[in-house]
Every structure is written in C-alpha cells, then in structure tokens.
Image 1 (cartoon, protein in one colour):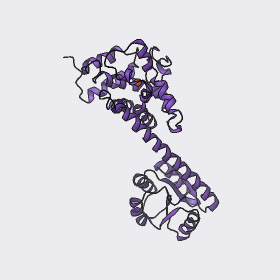
Image 2: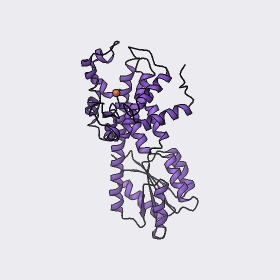
Image 3: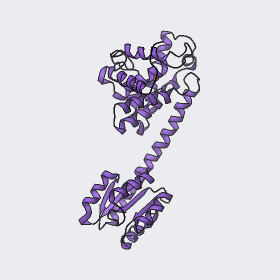
Image 4: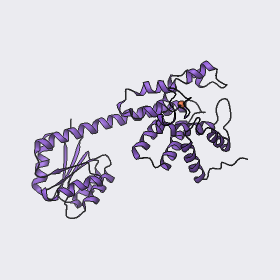
Length: 321
Ligand SMILES: [Fe+2]
C-alpha cells in the first residue's frame, strides 16, 4: 500500500540513515538515502519524493538553500529538517525557508512512523481533492465550450479577476480562491434548460428568473466537495450587487465576499465585451462607461477603479470613438 510513497533521507551519519531506512522500509515505503548534499541533489532532481528528511547541518549547503532547493525541485514534497539539540534553532528557522516541520535528534521510531502515516494520508487526500477539482473544472470549461458565445468566458473572467486581485496585492490564498471560483462561477448553468440558456432573443421575466437560479444550483453541485468549501461563497454570491439589489441573497457592500465582488466586475466586463446571441460585443469604451455608471450600484467602486487602472496600464484603449 505504501510502495508508491518515496522518502529521501539526507544525513551525514550512517547510523541515522540506516535507522530511518529500517523503520520506513518495514512500513513498505520506498526509501532512498544520501550521505551528503552532493549525493542528494541528483536524486532530488530525478525523483518526485513525497517526503524529504534532511539534516539541517550538512557541511556543504546552508539550511536556507537546502530547504528552498528541495521545495523548488519537489514542489509537493513534505520537507522535514532534523537537528541535534545544539542546532535545533536552525531547524526551527528552516520552516521560514519552506520546510514543513522539524525533528530533534535522537528520534523515537514509533513517533516517526505515526507522523509519516499522517503526512502520507494528508497527501493522499490532497491528491484526491486535486483530481476531483480537475474533473469539475473540465466540466465547467465544457459547459462554456458548448456555446460559441460563452466559449472561454470563465477563463477570461478568471484572468480579469486575477488581474484585479493581483493589483490589490491580495494574499496567495485569496488569489487561489479567486482562480478556482472564477473557473467554476457559472457551473450552476448546467441545471438551466438550453432553450433558455441558448435563446437568441431577449429573455422573458420567467426565463430570467430561471437563469437567476444558477448560483444556487452551483452551490448545491459543489457543496459535497470538501476542498471547494472556501470557494463556494464566491460562486454563490457572484451576482450580488453592491447596493443590495442583486441575487440570490440581496447582500450589500462588504457583506458580499471580496472575491465575489471582484468576480462581479470581471464577469460584467467580459460579458459586455463579447458577442451574445442577442447583441454584438460592446466597444471597450462603452463597457468601461457601464462599469463607471455601475459604481456603488452594481459594483464596488474601489474594484472598478482598480480594474480600470490595470486596463490602462496594459494599454487597453478605453477612449470613446
Ligand atoms: Fe453567473
């Protein structure tokens, strides 16, 4: 069961290498050993490891460079540094360079085995979640691709939303949330009849009310997926309006999650600047004017300003003709 789990141990002491190797081999893991950084580096480059356990005081490399190189070459590896009592501060420091945890020598083999089982279990769950997300993403993109009018819509909305979020210098976690929610924001349209979704003319009030159900449907589709829990509020609220007149909940102002307010601006701009069954794409200057008119009504004015600043810097011609 653990035969697909690769662990690399880097330590100058043969006794340490051998005791780790004994413990982990008994658990069925694939264990590789390196007595120095020179010996370890080619292995790190050649093999994707689940876990790398490295002595923090190797003679030929700094703790920082070691931790950073391992993370660079083995992005998904869980990195544990080890150190004797006198160097434990250095091991603690390694966390800020990208190590996940540290161990002080000497080790208790039972503790190590228990920790390793937890790490491997967590990695398996993360990998399952990623696969599930990739499948849902394919579905969302396929939904866009069904109709040439919306082909690429979600990807472009995501691109605009990330431009805004980047300009606002939001944290990486928020960017990740926006990236995933951007791709999935309209997935609920899967539950709207084609006759309405692809209708070439204007929608009746009844049909529009059907379309308005898509954030709720999207939420219900995605709710069972644990790894999407923090993205769902962005998807569910991407049609709220800053003045409280949007749907599904009529949230107003900062009650609406920031990521959802960003998606609203990106979504509106993308929709206005692309062809629709009932109209041609609007010129950029009109879309920009609509964003400005919509400040504090449909949109968060601060986000509109940020977006217009990014468009200008990217050389997008917003001038009226
Ligand atoms: Fe939508």
